[in-house]
Amino acid sequence: MNFVWENTVISMIAIGILYWLLNKYAFGPLFSVMEKRRELVKQQLDEAAQTREQAHTFVEEQKAALQDARKEAYEIIEQSKQTSNKQAAHIMEEAKSEASRLKNEAIRDIQSEKNKAVEQLRSELGSASVKIASKLIEQEVSEDKVQGELVDKYLKEVGGRS
Figure (cartoon, rainbow, N blue to C red):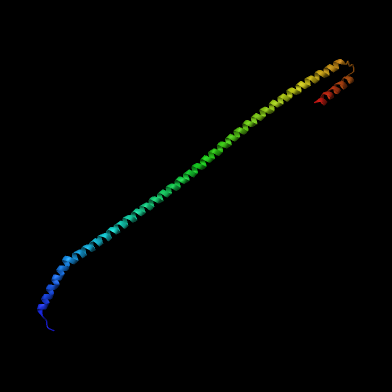
């Protein structure tokens, strides 16, 4: 094998021209495509990180909103309990007041009926006394024994009518 220096020079020149052509027409566009791809990947990674951060923020906001909703629900429940307790106390107070009013009214009615009964009894007793007195006056009685019997007889008559 002989070494031919002309072939080596031609090969070197051919390699140089090929490198220059590849650098001008192939490597430039290839590197620019690769650079664009690198930037696209970097942009997508940045967007993914930003989306992840937004998702994290959204989750935190949702947790806070859920806590607020639970707190409001608890407050509404407590407020409802207080309102129902107030209404129950008000209803009980009204019921006690009404019962007291009815009791007082019943006592007044009973007292009124009692007074009427006493008045009627006095009236009947008065008329019975007048009848007894008139009967006694009609008959002249001299003995105490006969007088007591007459009084007893008339009292039985009056007592029997009632």
